[in-house]
Image 1 (cartoon, rainbow, N blue to C red):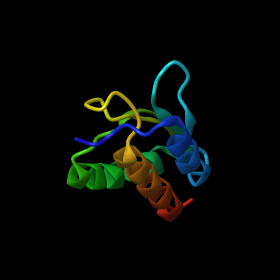
Image 2 (cartoon, rainbow, N blue to C red; image 1 turned 90 degrees about the horizontal axis):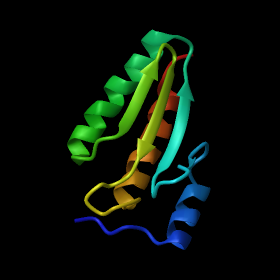
Image 3 (cartoon, rainbow, N blue to C red; image 1 turned 60 degrees about the horizontal axis):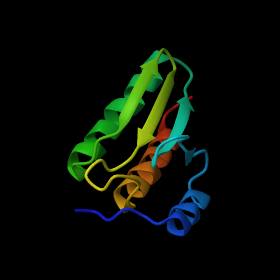
Length: 100
């Protein structure tokens, strides 16, 4: 099982993750991605789903039209772990590759 990151490690990791913030009231991180349209948002989610499945680490997310809201936490560890940071980095990279 992945170990929960302590506050300082989480703060340092977030420093390298543009757009990601601490979710209020939870030991989790979140980001809102906004795309050109629904097609781009859904394409992003499909690409992330493939990565998440390989990692066996799945996001909490919500999609409304061109917006994808994401929350990451490792439920088994009770908070943010290195898995969440790795998936957040992958999501940022995938978003950069998404046309628009």
